[in-house]
Length: 123
Image 1: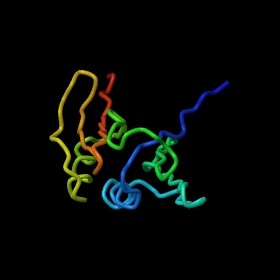
Image 2 (image 1 turned 90 degrees about the vertical axis):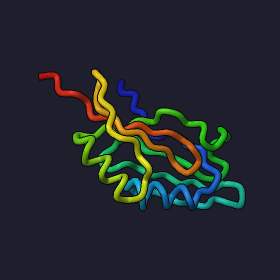
Image 3 (image 1 turned 45 degrees about the horizontal axis):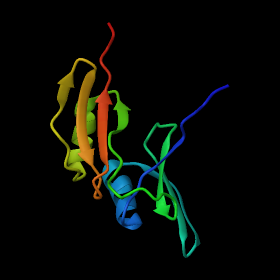
Image 4 (image 1 turned 90 degrees about the horizontal axis):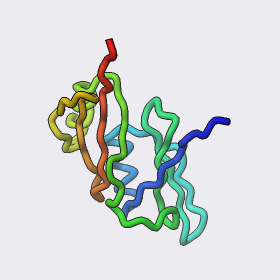
């Protein structure tokens, strides 16, 4: 039996601001934005090429906005990923090299933190 992680809730204070950040700046795809009623709005966004999405909205998650730490994306070219982020106005760290990969770090407007990793070649 496969167990697939497909949706991770991300707590935010302003849903529209978060959508703008993740879609316009980071480059995620907006899959769903559905208001169920005055207490519930469901938004789903997916990074390009990912099988896992993030969810946010109203009445979706009760975690404190900005409390998600270390969400991680994996890319084939960390330098290209950093350029993409910086060119779109995302304050991203310099590339950092570790034995387990090359990384760039950034955070969303609420302070949820992300790392972007280029996995080292095993050859």
